[in-house]
Image (cartoon, rainbow, N blue to C red):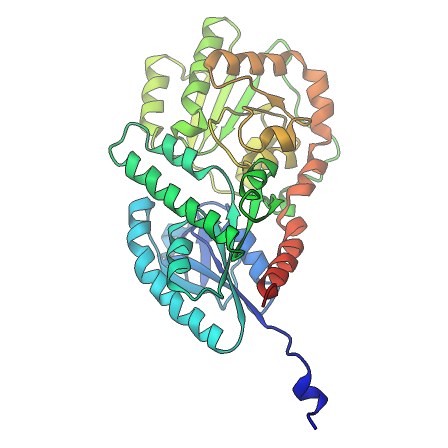
Length: 410
């Protein structure tokens, strides 16, 4: 007669490999990143179970190179793969990286584990692994925005643009196919993206964006909007076409021409940096525009949020922008274009810009300038709103769903 232990169904061990496509650097055993974007969430998720392994593209640097970077806590048992810079190098490194990971994942399968590969999508690494690995391996995709639109804007007017767009579309169609096969689950940033991916399979809306430590504990709003004076407007983001930064500069010039200027602080780096410098110089906007450059996440960046009256985000495409939640965390009011999931998630808490035209952007800024009391009242409640978009708020839910999905239909 068989013993109870022999007939008892074994509890499935779920191994989750969490791939971050955000390269990090290492110095003397410590890890650093240029920006907290997604790797921080995966690192927190991997800390919740010994069977979760974080995978990061990584290279070593000297101590002198760490000054402009953000220290980040990563698990000691993470898997390092070849690092890269830019999309082209990322594609080239995907092949050796994928084969390296394939060996480790197949060994885990041989040990009888249920395996999920999780990471951002659409992405070349997860695409290639989905072709190389057995069909009993499942995938989880974190969809943070409309990648096709983002690539279209990034490569607009460039010969390589058509190839890049078609490649991303191939990656995206693969996600749809895996969803239909019930081999994948999609975690989307916002309900708009969820509705798109839910047409093909299982999709869940989340928005893990910021660390709870970023949320201001100040109970009163210390900033004072400048009624009848100079409004201080902040932009934080990539200096590229899809972020609408040139349109914001045009709006600044219009404001000067109208005799009602505002001060604009621009924080970030990107391909438009040199052209923005030339524009500011040519149009004599030095008095009104401060081009700060890249500022690492941390106290200094929070100081900029705390010392301005309005964050302006005139993007052409977004998912759920982290910078909006960071502004909310500091009690800073926001004006943003109605793209991605911004209207669905935040319309009650910010001012929507009608469109990306410089005049519409200026009209929105002027509206905020003329409604100071209302904005001040709304801003006082924004840190509480930010609590709904913290890494900690979502990580346990994601872990539970990953574990359930791994053993479903097993």
